[in-house]
Length: 228
Image (cartoon, rainbow, N blue to C red):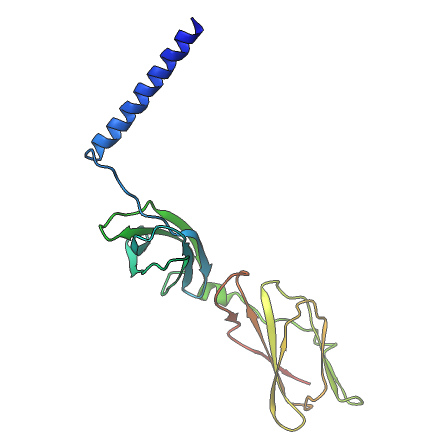
């Protein structure tokens, strides 16, 4: 009795499965549909009014091109590709983008025009709004001093945003030459300059990376200028 019930269930499942297959083929005109391989490991790297779309073609030598859509498919770009015998890398810069979050759809195509299933990937575009909010690294004015006895200028830093990657200090040395010093340690509390020419301008300009994988560096538009 139990065996008959199991056989009946298997028969119903097989019939249903076959029916679904027939319905699918009927919907597709009874033709077997081929989908080209997708862009694997797709990522979007942020930039200044642009992004870098990165990915890998790891299979399917029949792929001849790929197409990227964004802005609700109102914008797109198409690129030909010649597959090698190994893994191929896609590095595509997409420029003149609006600042903010952005989503992309990537499809590949073979020579017959067959399209892959979509690969959706998103990222962030930075621009003027982000840049306008950046400030130079601060310093303590009362303890940033020039010592007449030692001839050393001490810049006493305050803490800085963790997205700041370095601060450029521009000054004139004792020989009258323009110098640049890059302070890369965000934890550094003091910088000592032994060849600063007293009474001349010192300019501070801080650089930021919006995130750790961003492709563009942003500088504060206006330098902080002082003298000691």
